[in-house]
Length: 286
Image (cartoon, rainbow, N blue to C red):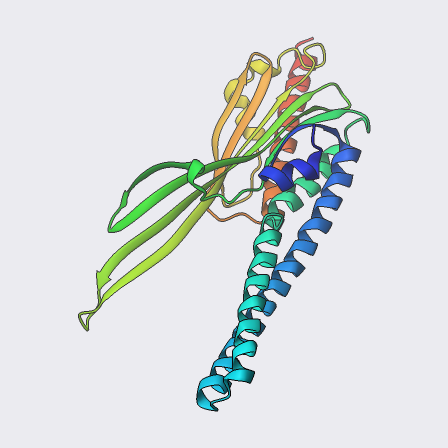
């Protein structure tokens, strides 16, 4: 079975099981590949521009200066360089990934590894394809005068176990809108406008050992007071059923690596606050 970087290079998706050490090492390898690909894309662009300059020069020499013997080969060489640059750029584009996705996973892995056995496996699902690719389109509609394409992309999912035996799941879904409209300006000209909107839905679940937290799933509304989220984030749901705590939170602001890690870390800490609250109640009742 292809490894982490191999799967992402082939399909821009990875699904498998890795330890935190393996995941950290694989992400470093992925970053090296991504940076190399970015340099190759730049090289391809420069080559294409250089080829265009050769092509124009050859045309000017052949036609303007009436020297086809010199200008013709120059123009042909320019076309060749343009094609070469396009090929380089196209090949490098397959392994040029969105930095913030794998960087967020890297920081989250370091955060989780502090409370995990180094050999404990994590089930990882990672999608580095663009959020507005066709298979992620969920519907089309309108918002006022805007025609809107709505995309949803659950691009990250993690499952594992912490040192105290608590099992966790983490998922991030990016919600994206491509908006477009046509409007007549004051001068009578038709203008086409586009804009995008994006947000994120985060879901974090903890399933502790029932012996350690026997009443964790029975707190109900009391648990909400223990939840602390960033100012731009809305609490969507807090479930405490069947000894599984599940916290859902959403933001309508485009996310960054820093804001994403802050959100997930505060969600994890909030759920542990709920667990600590249940333990305090257990002690008070015993």
